[in-house]
Image 1 (tube, rainbow, N blue to C red):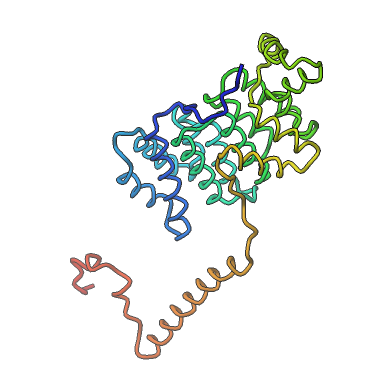
Image 2: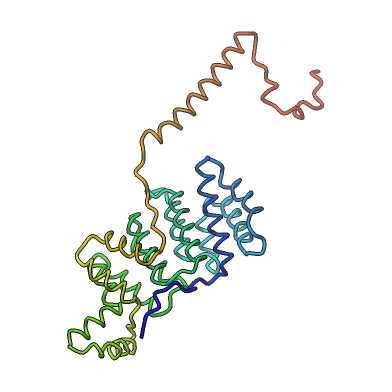
Amino acid sequence: MEVDSARSDVSPLPREEYVEQAHLFEVLGARMRENIPAQEILESLREEILVTTKLPMAVDFMLAELRHLGAFATAMERLPHYFTPFQAFVMAEAENDRQRFDLRVGLEILRREAAYRAEGASRQGLFLYQLEVLCRNRMGYDAGLDAIAKDSAFDEHWRNWILTVRRQIGIVDMADLLFVRSEFYHERKAAEQGSPALFNELVAEATAQGFPPLFGRQEGRIAWANRKKDPLLLFGALHRQLGYPEAPRSAVADPEERLLPVLARRVEQLEARLKLVEEEQRGGIDLHRFYKPTDFDGVTGEG
């Protein structure tokens, strides 16, 4: 038996859906940096998105939820046939006021995942990308791995193993968890018994018991080489070798970057107040500029 670690189509939606999803998340993140309201962004994106996809209908629903509840995550949770549980989880974490997780980072996470699926993702790469996202951004492993396990991209064997990782992460070395479910583990076991020909028999036996290899020889070798090391070194090596996207991470906040917009708004407020004071000293404030021309229709000035 040989694990197919090459990229294969494990995405439940057509490629064009993921291409448009990636565009949606990219534009949302970019325009939010310009302080454009999310509702306005979605309304304009509704016209940009390819109408032959189902994303425009999803955007309409997201707009409705945004107007009523002020959040994206609830809409994504209520569209499980279109958005994955992991996508909804990431958005919920980004919108949680108690978490120090930037919404723009969350959108970039979703953009990279959608683009990866559009290119043709492998189960190994998809799982490792999602797990690295949880690790690097200090998101909850319990709820995060549960959301990953519910992704339709993973079959029953993968789902059972992901839930095992959920129970054992932090107790068992992540490299060991990967190693024992790889082809390289059975290869070493056969070599230790002095008969490399036993490899196929060991794999068949493990598969019959419900524990087939989920990772190939290459991933197993990387995991073996990174045992008892920082998990980030493991992720770095796997990312380089498997070619899945690099997991975005929250940047260290720059105090000056946060302070400058606040100061700019205060300066604008002071300028507006000074103009009002100057107008009053010159003979009064012209109130007409605070109203639309139609506001004075029918007004004659008579008591």
